[in-house]
Image (cartoon, rainbow, N blue to C red; front, side):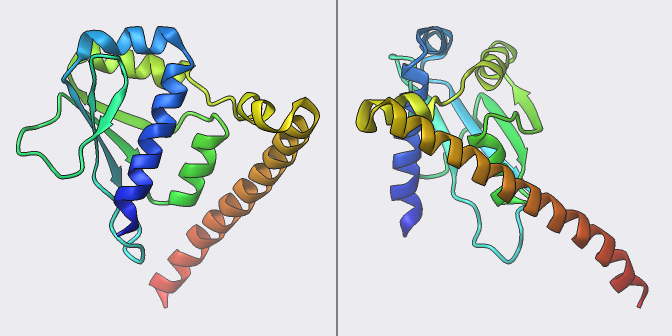
Length: 171
């Protein structure tokens, strides 16, 4: 029930990031009407299934979330490793490029790859508009510190789980 509302907010955030970089919307405009579908592979079975992530490019060079699966194949399919959703989210928010597999329209794939490599959400700049320079800088610094700590903990837990799994299989 929360997924549609969350994906509408995610679409607004993606469009905010795209709109802050004129080169990004110019790269997407020629692909107006094309669909990009994002699939999360190896999603943990203990979690609810991931939401449908399919976006259509608008004439403005922005994205429009499609709420339901479409019968036609997307022009571009982007596959991400979803085995550790928390780490994927933290890496994405911190500006790290996730491991991506792309299939479909080559020109669209080239432009989407450019977006992955060049677009970053400048959270500190957005916070400056609301809170002022000093508070925004301090919040961004603390957020970065927290993200590094959580990422290290998740990576440590992942490596521990990898070491424990073979022992369980042998027992």
